[in-house]
Image 1 (cartoon, one colour):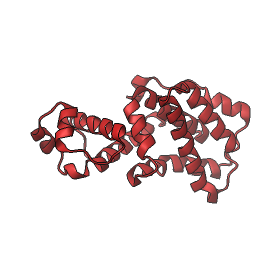
Image 2: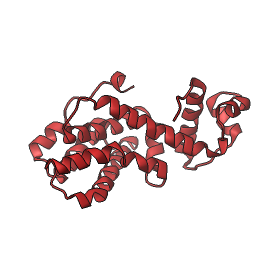
Image 3: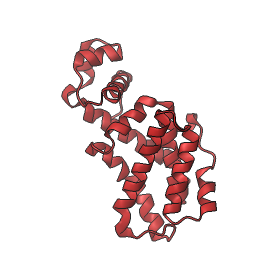
Length: 204
């Protein structure tokens, strides 16, 4: 995906908020312009195909997550540490950016583009962990493991957005329980799930 300019970022942010709030995959140009605080002409100038805005936003979100993960995990080799950190970062971001979290909670399982977030680097890390004997699951169980992780992350995001758990507690519990399910010893799983996270500035 080509770099997104500042006007496009503003439009995408407004669109994500509208989609998250309404739970629908279509908004009018007028609604989008009002939410973004720009003229209708600005929308047309910055979106080649406004009718596929939802897919554009979903693709931008997925690319953004892949980029962040690539930067943050460049020096982290252990698949279990990468998994625990990645899960907790998603949950923390949902707390910091509630519309982002609600967008994921509403569409991450139903939209093919967003489903791709779980099948890229996360799957490569899981496969490495299985091949290295870090995880106790079998390789043919990989799709089920991905589903378990995705469901756990989205469930934790829901708890945070509803105010039932703090992002820190929800993230640590989610990461710890998933690692235990994958065969990591309980003490090590707890340590990995409670390790210090990168700062928000590092993730930005």
